[in-house]
Image 1 (tube, one colour):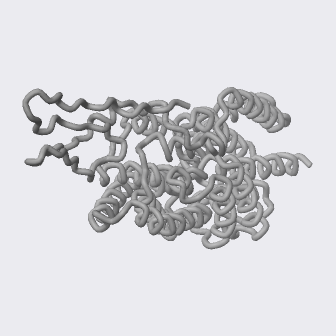
Image 2 (spheres, rainbow, N blue to C red):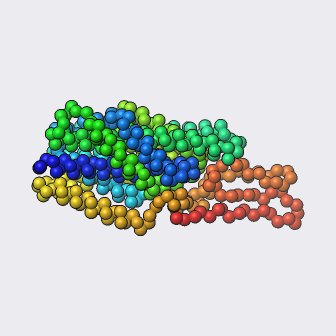
Image 3 (cartoon, rainbow, N blue to C red):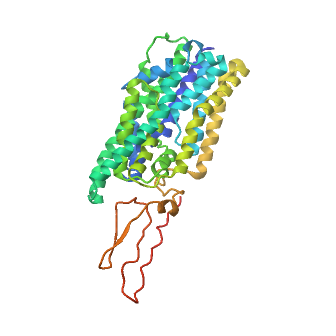
Length: 426
């Protein structure tokens, strides 16, 4: 009984993490499709949930990395695993409340590492695995995604120059849906496995399976279902930031971002890298803004990057504190920590109701979108001999409307510059 209750709490908490991972990272797959109108919000999250579940059964390479490649399994106990999960969930909920697309993957890794450090010290962490499988991919993935996405966006804009907007919107809509589906599938193959690895660690620590055991089928299925359920809730706050906060996205950009993200995430899953889908998709969305020469809201991007930097240490710190509480209360420590998690989750949920984001307002204009930001985009104005003004239209869609004084006869009034379009606020 002494071992059974902590093990049950760990499994419930691990599935809860998968649930938060689902609604935290749904925006990774569907933000651009919802922002461009390629998919209706509810249809998008339903499609994402189904494909996340399917993806959970396709590969177990990442689960093996989490279970056996980051910390020494010999020093892992059930209290360590529980503390790590609570640290990860807490960070997920805080960043979700703020609408900050942080990495659930790194929150989980940080939580586990922080709990191990609190329990046994630095020798319990496999630092080479942490660097090669987590930290280096975290640095490279968003940069690679940005480069690939920017290149793809530039190519699509050059190829479709002169094609009516209605034609490109219809054509790229289907490509964007396909790309979003691939990201959802890739998300299942990558993120769902992280909790599988944690539950496997718990089963090993609880003496239920041997150290060389694979992930049981019931673990695969339950993790996939938990993530799919969380995904269906939508994660509207994160989706709004990615779809509206970084840059304005059209269907061509959306398809370029989605296909670039899916390719990188699937490749990382194949090699067992515990990659953050948040980092990849955010880099891809930024790349589309650069490739299309649209205004990029660097202040929003800066807050995201700051969140990425502190995710590992923040989750590790919470996990270390939780392990200390478990140690302080002895046999009842796991129950106390689990109770504190329930209280914290309830408080955060209540705070989120003050400024709720849902399917009805996820596509409202971004508050930080200002006319000054749009004015940064160059607009070339030419006057012809007949006095007619031509504006070169291959410009960012959010550039302010501008006209110049055309040639006019004596006594005529010069043309005026219309005021920039106002931006709506949430």
